[in-house]
Length: 194
Image (tube, rainbow, N blue to C red; front, side, top):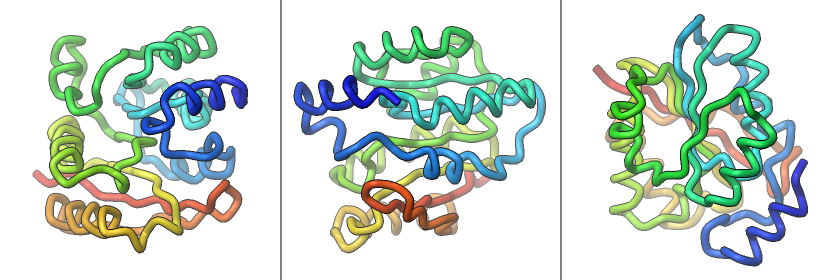
């Protein structure tokens, strides 16, 4: 795990990471567990960071013949990810541009979107813009999974994001509580409507 790179980016851009440590392997396994994807389907990862979810997704893509696209805003992290995962595709871009990114790359709507973005800490308009981009990039009925820190759920912005998920998806389920993460995390799940 790239702790040195994580700490370097945290010091350089403390407002962008919103984390105190890279996500654990337990969280990475939990967020990718049970994804119902078949050969040639596209899985998109938003906010890849140093790559803890990416490692699990690469194994999943390899075993099932899936396509992968990672979207990360930090150019240094994108360089790191490309070196660590040369068989995967990454782009340095804003996740809110996901529909346009898929169109420019001639990629189909995704079968799953996995998010490491700090959505629960963002303002209302940013949350709406990002969630709308995600849902516009998913096939109807397909899965959006997002992790958030368990202790943060009392925050107004976190509660607002959960209401937004319910509003846009019709439901917001807590897929898992992962205690083996620093700090403990929840995995939220919604599905794109038709």
